[in-house]
Structure formats: structure tokens, C-alpha cells
Image (cartoon, rainbow, N blue to C red; front, side):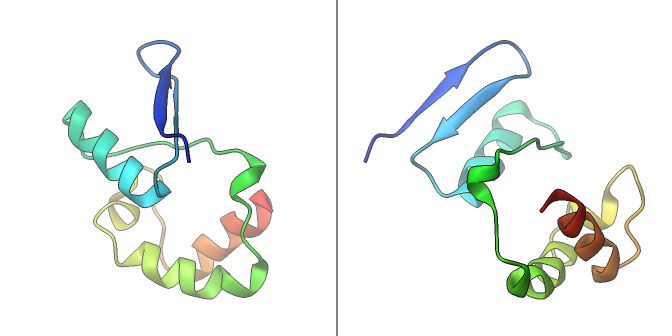
Length: 85
């Protein structure tokens, strides 16, 4: 499996060959920030039957509850996932 990172500018890059969760955390630490806005491709689609688990886990992270746009609970995360599906 190939691994790497392609940087297109100060804010645009593609990381591949690494688990997404690890790559996101590494990027946040590398930039010294506490927040991230992600735009991901359809290749990361997840089946709707996993939305409940994803939403619950997302609310347990330090990031989602402190998002600049308030997220009041797992139901709102599920709504976002459904819009992105």
C-alpha cells in the first residue's frame, strides 16, 4: 500500500494510505490548531446503518461539541451524515 501526502497550498492537501482518524489528528497537531473543517471524497462513504455509532462517537470527541456551529447532539450529527450521503 502506498502512503503519502500531497500538498496543494497552505490549506489544501490529500493524505492517503493512513487511517483517516490518525491522519486528521496528526494534521491538527501539526498545524497547532484545535479545530478542523473537513471536505472528504465519496470514497469515504459509510453505510447508513453505521450513522448511530459514528454520531455517538463524534459527540465523545473534543472537537464536535466545541464546533463553531453548535451541534446539540447525535441527532444533528446523523442529519449531517444523511445530507452528505
